Length: 140
Image 1 (tube, rainbow, N blue to C red):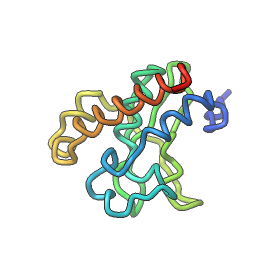
Image 2: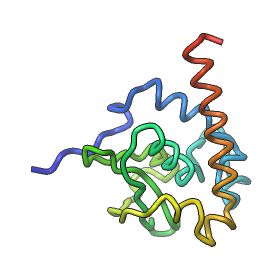
Image 3: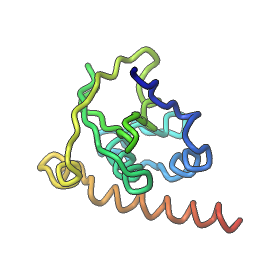
């Protein structure tokens, strides 16, 4: 029996909100930074967000290709369900095909990842996430 993939609503809402608060123009993929806006904060955030989700929830990094959009990353959680916190960057009705697992080293170290400054953008997202999580925990 196939499990229904979790929706964002099934993710701890505090975790989801802290991730979303951590996104900014500088954490978006360079090709998306000019178009990034608070109205579509997930735009260009997929690789760095998938890395962060893996840090916190474990599981595998998944890569797929979305027609007309390019590469897209999301997560397969340790229980086998999928989680895609950046799905909202795409227009409604966009088909996101099943992806293939990719090693963390690929997402951070491939030639394309280096060109897209993924390691730097990931570190910046992680620092922002840690700051927002601390502030949320301690009410700052």
